[in-house]
Image (tube, rainbow, N blue to C red; front, side, top):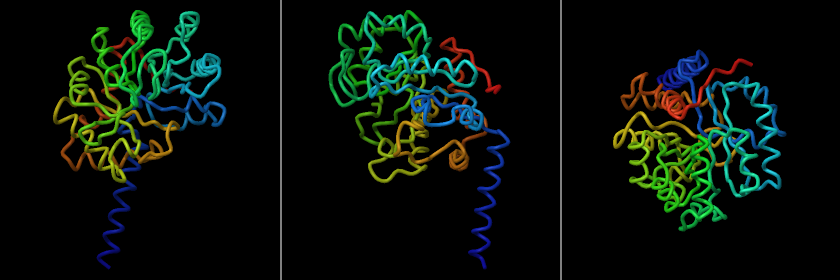
Length: 298
């Protein structure tokens, strides 16, 4: 009988957390969701209407595309009807001096330079080389046109090159912390410190093997949050889920985020703290970058 009461109590806790989520006590701002890449494979209208995120930066993953600009334009034409989503570009391998103005005309919020591997712009996270001559020129052009450079997937030398090249808040849309999980995609402590010192933003992502060398759980994600908050700041951290970008995630959708709320509360985080991590930090970062945001009105 006592075990049955415990189970009922736990289920009630989850139920009420679920209700809190759908009563929108906590909104979610996501700095990296790849749903625009699979634009033809899902009902985008239903997805944008049903998700409970107040704001999404959605990426076009170009690495496997023959004509990325065509896809970017297609996505941009859809997004004009949805105020809660901005466009980002993941992997700028295709950009050259002949088409860069065509890319800029689509007004992306951010661009990564590569996706893990070396290209004509830079080295990726699986490489040790920094920015090439064209890579440095590209970064300066993005900076001059108010496009945020996203350091995700960039080599550590490349991140340092970007840091020394332009005066812009350091932004990494989806990565985790190397001190807790020594994966090449994760950030060293001096890189985390630069995010804090420049009032930038880190979106922690949900990829299993970026969170732990063992089978990661939600506890590992909260450990990454706690590490950054305790060592640097509570104002420059949030989520970059990688939904639709990876199959190896510890959560499948925004509906499950109430579990994170419960764990953060158990560690002493207040409602205001959780609101910062869930949405305010990213929305404030967007404001600092000159990006206006609105709730989805569709």
